[in-house]
Amino acid sequence: MEINDSSILRFDNLLSTNSYLKEHIGEFLPYTTIWSDGQEKGRGRYNREWISYKGKDLTFSILIPLKDLKIEYWKNLTQISSLSIAEELEKLDFKVSIKWPNDILINDKKVCGLLCEVSQRGDEKFAVLGIGLNVNSTLEDLSNINQPATSLFIEKGTVIDREELLQNIVSSNISKFNDFTKNGFQIYKKEVLRRLAWLNEIKIIEDNDRSFDGRIIDLNDDGTLKFLKSDGEIINLISGEIRFKKGH
Ligand code: BTN
Image (cartoon, rainbow, N blue to C red; front, top):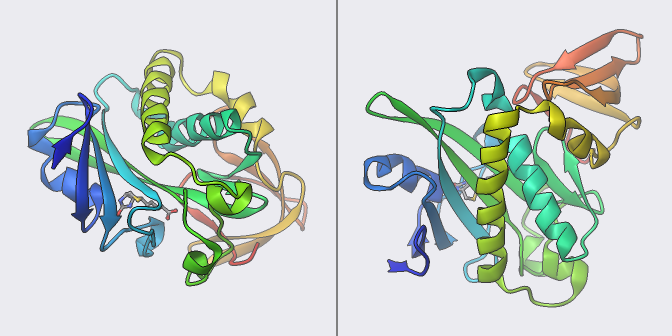
């Protein structure tokens, strides 16, 4: 382990930065980031595997204290994080969109995923916010992934400095999170909506064992998704409950 910054701890290889941070939660100060060059058992949402390439991509987790964040806003944490990552990528001239609730896409292909897990230390609750960003992986590397995926390198054709990008993403996440704790989600809704993927496009959504045809028509003030079903009914979808069908 090497300390390269007051709060970013770099590891060569871990099973999963989220699992490591959860297991060692008592050892780290709030806002510590665990960064691992390689992950042997990276985890995604819905128990999926997260594949990344050692020395090429970014896999890290940030320890976020939840004590000052109203419980109604917990579900928005990953949306705030994906907004701040989107803004950092835009500074590098990438045109990104946010696939609700929190995947980041470039040209409709996934470049970044977030896995947020709530963990407890004593009677204090923390979010372990895990971020996987495909930075320098190649087309060949990503050919094993069974959904449309891309990397910053594939999109731009040049190698990106991972360490600098990581530092920028971590600091913008922490500062946005602090503002969000004070202000709530509503003021960010417009910024998320502006980047929302597939607004008004016909899509299929899977929610547990149900699936709906229809289109996203808006984002509600609380970050839930307003979806107009093809039978005319409007439903509000809550973060974490839905999945877009593969390939959509
Ligand atoms: C998803 O899109 O399903 C979420 C992917 C989250 C991957 C990151 S990589 C760092 C952290 N450690 C993990 O095991 N998962 C998250």
